[in-house]
Image (cartoon, rainbow, N blue to C red; front, side):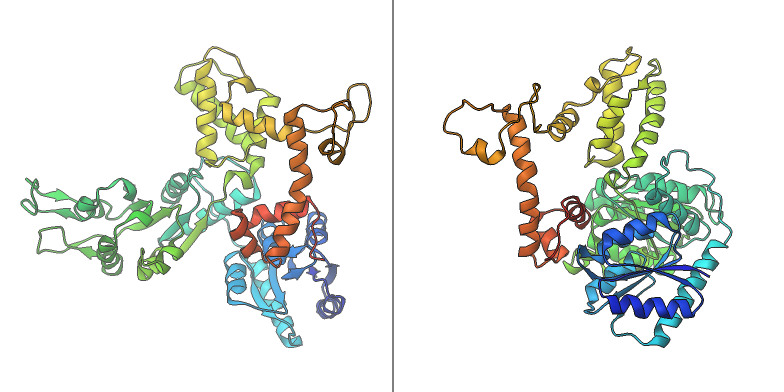
Amino acid sequence: MVKILVIDDEEYIRDILSTRVERMGHVAYTASTIEHGLKRLEQTAFGLVFLDVNLPDGNGLTALPAIKANRHQPQVIIITAVGSVRGAELAIKNGAWDYIEKPFKKEDIILHVQRALEFRDAKQHQPQRVLLDTDTIIGKSNAINKCLQQVAQCASGSVNVLIQGETGTGKELFAKAIHDNCMATNDTYIVVDCAAMPEALTESVLFGHKKGAFTGADKDSKGLIEKADGGTLFLDEIGELPLPTQKAFLRVLQEKKFRPVGSTKEIKSSFRLISATNRNLDIMVEQGEFRNDLLHRLKTFVIELPPLRDRKEDIKDISLFYLDQLCKKHETPQKVLLPDTLSILEAYDWPGNVRELINAIEKAILSEPDMPLLYSMLLPAHIRVSHAEKGLKYLNTNSTGTALPSLASLLCLTTFNDQIPPFKVFRNNTLEQVEPLYFQTLMVQAGWNLDQAAKISGLSKNRLYFFIRKYHLKKD
């Protein structure tokens, strides 16, 4: 018997699915909105979730990552009255079991439930590989634990792995963790920064060259692909690899052999390939900047690293770890991370991710090396300014308890006899009152299509969903 949650705003759909799963011997729960569904997921251990796409408080697909990150790891079946190729792609890529359209047949529902629960049960009873060396991957959040589980999965074989994520999310650390835990390769670990290689020398660096192959080639040189034989080749920023080199590299992956520049003899090399990028390779393929056949070879196994702003619960552990490491590195007294300093670190959005956090801590240490406490004053100015701007609140009363004027009355003042707050306080309060109107207008203009709203606003869909929930915006 498994607990199954149905999130759909149509009562008859909730009734149909509830009746069907209960006849199969399971227990059904229902919710009519994303918010209600997420609350139920926090309270109950569900094994399966039916998730509608068009819900009163937003697009159900935006809640899919949060549902998949739930500690009970339920399987998710997307149901929708109006299906789309883009919606199906988004659902499957974010871990949905399947994507089905209404109306659905009774037999289809039974089969989907059976297969999804069988898979979940088999997955839970699989022996987990113990990671041997992830000391520098810090965090306990659901998002980072999911990535570590993926490291364990792909480290058990020798498939090609593509690591995707924003700059500073730790792609190099995860690549090294995969290599360190892979028993199928030797200790050889070759790192290639594709963005740092001069285009004219790319093939020479990768494939090597013979003496006299080009001006300046005064001796034979072994390429990095040959050096990686039997081990791991890590291509960082693979999106920067020139198109001609992509074609030559594809042949290496297909045939496990290559020809050095200026040579007539082929050399064999078998290696584990891990590549990483902060660019969208699918879009690059559409624009003719990246080979589609090479991309298929790269993405046998894909790991998506979350930005730090999506796992802020890890900031404390990361900060404490690097505070200790950096004090040792610079031979300064160990410092204590004060609670108010930590609160500023946790409030910041970290566009540069973990790398930016490490740099901020290092600058704070070096600004006062002998200070035993890490005061917030020591943090970089732009982080403190960001926190100050977020923290300003327009209080409803002054220190004597007298009511301050409303925004409307303040804007209409013809004299300054009434009490006026400081300008920064006024500005922040104005933003707080205008922001809900902006997002409501944005969503109406975009027809409550999150993709369109993200394109107009320049925000990510996760960020948009945050504001929709924050201001309780609804389609009606």
